[in-house]
Amino acid sequence: MGRAGTGRRGIRRSHRRHVDLHLQFNSNAGNLLRMSVAITIRDVPDAVRDELAARAARAGKSLQEYLRGMLVETAARRPVEDVIARARARVQATGVRVGAESILAARDAERR
Image (cartoon, rainbow, N blue to C red; front, top):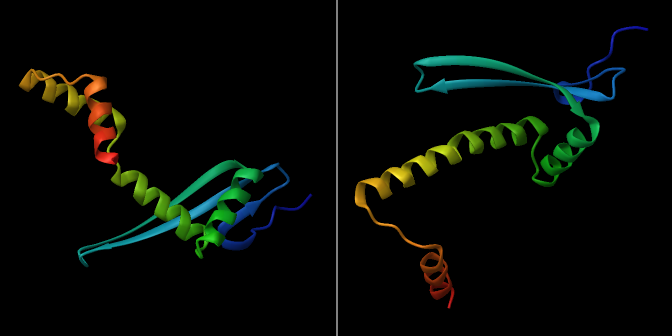
């Protein structure tokens, strides 16, 4: 059997049931640094790839643009562990504790 061919937009289909996604990112931060990073994600199930491609199409983007946006958005979010650590540090520094009932009551009051 010959080598597997490359499909559209860097998607490599092989005789396996999964696809490999190949992404390349180019960064130009203030013309000081040019960096190219290639990422290969192996063994992505066909159903996952198809769903992501459908979401990208509905958003009017290529699969690469869509996935790049997801990566940028994910990297911009603080990890849950950091948020919890900051909240614990704040409680320790101030000694103030707010119960769940107070938080929910305040939330519900804002919705009225």
